[in-house]
Amino acid sequence: MTGQSGWRFTDDRGRVAETERQPGRVLAYVQAGATLWDLGVRSWGVFGSGHDGAEIDRAKAGELPPDEVVYLGAGAALDVDTLLRGSPDLVVAVSYGGGQVYGLDPDTAKHLEEHVPVVVIDVGRSRTLAGTSDRFAELARSLGSAATAGAEAELEAARARLREAVPAGVRVVALSPADQDQAYVARPALWPELAALDELGLGLVDPPPGPGVNWHTAPWAEVAALAPRILLTDVRVNAAPLSALRDQPDWAALLDAGTLVVPWNPEPLCSPHAHARFLSTVADALDSVRAD
Image (cartoon, rainbow, N blue to C red; front, side, top):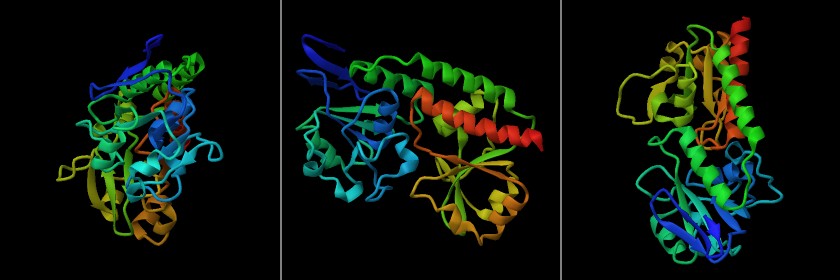
């Protein structure tokens, strides 16, 4: 909320972030910054996680313009001095549960909050993608962004299109390529964006039970045996690039069998526009399946 008493927002840890005036120099985890950008909030800078490198991961950056938003780095490169370098008046971070700030060392996060208000939004499986999107929208409104009716209409149209595009019996698998030997196959119910596909009638193939909570580690021969018609494939920089699989025989067999590869970012932007774009990409692949 905002008003004459200043700005305040209660985050998903139950903590109240307060400033004397509405923040205007926002630093955010890249997923949060890209989501807020879609919602009309212009972040000054963004930072990555331990999975990222010295350059911003464009698969996670959405429509953030690289010439306008500063990227501060990731992992061990992020200390308090680096994070405060641009004098942010608000930090927006994400958590996968327990209130722990994702992407920052716990001590760094603790000391950062001694200097600047930090808002943490839970993006984990305890909440639906729509619920997370609502929380980001609430934060964006508090920061002065107006609701975008056009984006909501775009999302509803994309949902309707995907429902109509789902052919009977299509097999869809989501995974992250690990290397030439194996891949991490997603357990769909534990990924909010994949669960949203299930709600629209596109049930993804569930890998067999095993020790992995979110992922099932499988050799490529096992992936091929799942007989996917569509592969939602992790395209973040920490995943093995598809070009590195060129000589992998089971991967080649999947492509020869007509499997369609659709790019997937397991750290999705939680905005109506971004989700509509993802649904439209999946619907395009389903249209191709129906046309065969």
